[in-house]
Length: 168
Image (cartoon, rainbow, N blue to C red; front, side, top):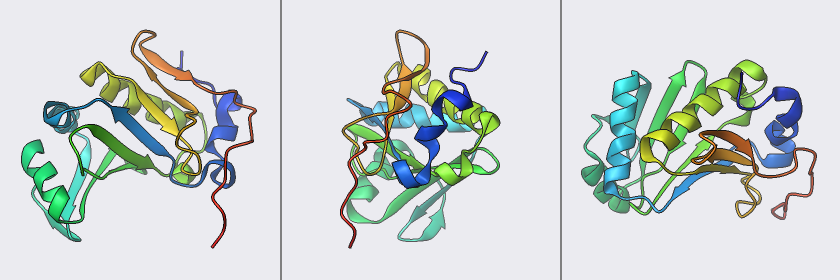
């Protein structure tokens, strides 16, 4: 049985409501947690691409990646399956943050991929993983709950009052 059903959560996957790149975060992390994510990528065989200042280079150990993230524009792209990408920006050890593209996450199959990805990371770190709209990161919509050992709703799926940033 899936963690979440598409018909119950499809409002959370509307790019017009949530922004196209909602924020996913794991607070209270360390260099070891970052390394655990890198090890998880390798053990699962997920495709990935690491770049510094736009140049694709070999993925270093987490400590080196985080040190470079302070000096350079560092990005780690991970594809748990083709067509679904997570973009990590390793700037600090204390939080693991990444974006997913809602345009890639339309339907039950893609929702299952996202839930499986969040669950795998959350289990690996034994930490909660939350997804919040890019327009209102303080109000998460869903996430991996360590105690429940699954992805759960963190907001009413029919809520449409996310705070929107003013237009430029």
